[in-house]
Image (tube, rainbow, N blue to C red; front, side, top):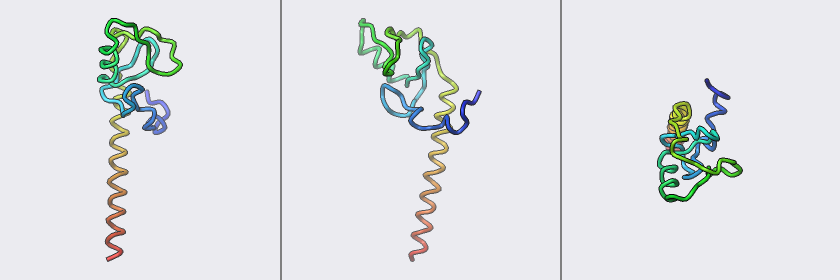
Amino acid sequence: EMVGGDAALDGNKLKCPITTMLLEQPLKNTACGHVYSRAGVEQLLKGAGRRKVGCPVAGCTNADLQRNQLAEDVQTGLQVKRYKQRADRERKAKMSQMEDLDDDEE
């Protein structure tokens, strides 16, 4: 299911709330629905040790984040892949335009 088409490809919505970087190997919290990068959430849980740690998303009521709540999020992984591809195409197009401008100046 594709939600919102290209609107779903907003880079800010594809950032990990822990690392603030683009999601990598996204895991969805089955208890609250929030998505994290695998490395970010594993580091968060490791750093907590035996202490209880809640979902890091502001305002989330899930106060007990556990490994068994995490599942691979294939859909978000595909959205991140499409976002990266689109950003790469846009970057290449911009570079091409800049090269064309340089050629015009000569």
